Image (cartoon, rainbow, N blue to C red; front, side):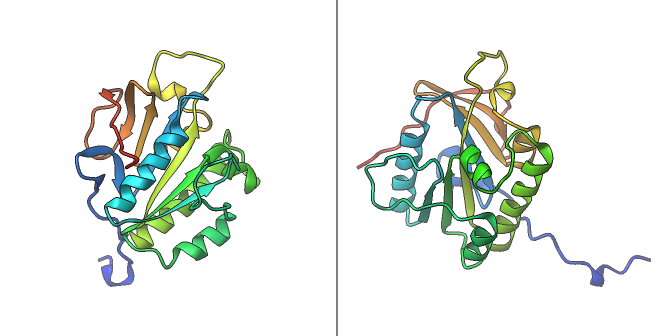
Length: 199
């Protein structure tokens, strides 16, 4: 008979929304928000940061794109090993936002188009959320040179990105298409884009 006393439990718990009434972002999970260039996903994620801080979350926003932002509380990205070490002190009331996944991957000499590289990166992210309960939100790009018919095809890069996250959705100012959601939303559902207040 197998001896279960020699095994370590996975530490994964039931998933719940990060924000009450918003089933797009997963608490204690990995969420990916993507859009075409110039749609405003960074602005939306800065609003998300503001909303989460109002809800008493501690949010760290890493600007891996080094884009100009009129906000003080945005940080230079860490390499993966540094991020893992830094996040060991995180709790389930902490959120890490990385903007963008493509730039963060390049910073770590990883190819966003390579399944092995993305699997390796997402396993590091998964280790953080399982150990700490912290939530990770990744700002991502969609293919710009094509207008494809199905939402999953719009996610730029390796298939491992969609496979390894808990929630993935395509953002636009008018509506949001759910690509994947472990909170129970049906794939390819079109939702009104949730509004977040900057007040």
